[in-house]
Length: 318
Ligand code: FES
Image (cartoon, rainbow, N blue to C red; front, side, top):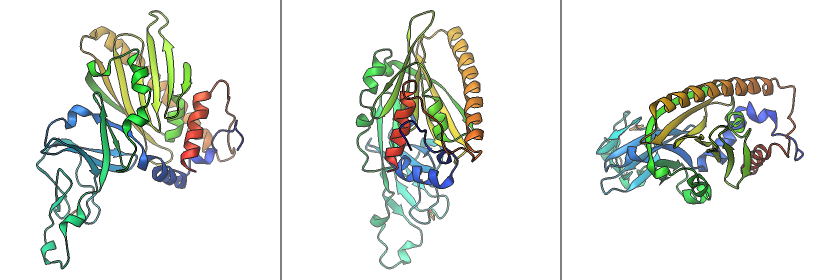
C-alpha cells in the first residue's frame, strides 16, 4: 500500500476485518452514548450498544457515575435495555441481581454451590465520563481519560458555541447499507480541513450570514455538527452493524431561544443532505463490494482528513 492508496476495498466488506476493528478499535474507544441528564439522578441507568458491545451506565445511590459491560456474569445474557430508574439490575434469564455499583447481590440457587463467592462475579467495569451535556462511554475500564481524546476539540467548538447553554430537542435515528468507514469518510469530504491526532475538524462560513459552521469526526466514530446560524449542535455515533450496514442517530441541541421557523428550515435542509449522503455511501458500498478492485487513489492535497482517518484506522489495527 503506497501513501496515496486508499485502504483495501476488502476492509469495507469483510466480516473478519470488522471483527478486528471491534477488538482493536471499538473495544477501546470513547463514543457518544447519550445525554448526561439521562443519568443525572441517583438510581438512574442507561443501556446502550457501542458497536456490538452492550454497556450499562448507572448513577449509584451515592451519586457516583459508573459504567459496566451490560452482560450477565452467569451465562452471558444482556442484562437490561433502555433507560430509567431502578434500585438494582436483575437479569431477565435466571434473576441474578446486581447493585447499581455492579456488585452481585443475589444469585438464586448459588447457595448450594460449594466455593461460590459473590464478590468474584461483579459486573465488569467500563469507563464513562461527560463533557458538558454529553455522555461518553468506553468499554475499556483502563481507557485513557476522555479529556485526552477530546484534546483541543472543546476549545475549537467553544469559538462558535457554548455547549453548556444548549437544550436537547430531539433524537433522529437513521442508517445506511454501507460500511461504517464509508460513512465516516463521507463525513470528511469538504470545507476547510484540519487534521488532529484524535479527530478531524472541518470549518465553513455561511454564504449569506458569514456565521461559522464546524463539523468534526472524533475518532473513531462520533460525528459533531454545528451549522452556521443560531446556536445548534448535533452529535451521535456511527455504529457498525455488520460489514455492510451502519446505524446512526443524532441528538439535536439548540439554544433555548432559537426561532421555530428557522429550526423547521434547518431540519428540512438536514433531511435533504442526509438523503443525498445515503445515496452516495450506498453507491460506494456497492462499488467496493464488486471484488474486482483492490483499492482506490487518495488525493493527498485535497483529502487530508480522509488520509489522516485512514492512517489512524490502519495504525490502530497494527
Ligand atoms: S444469564 Fe443472567 S441470570 Fe442466568
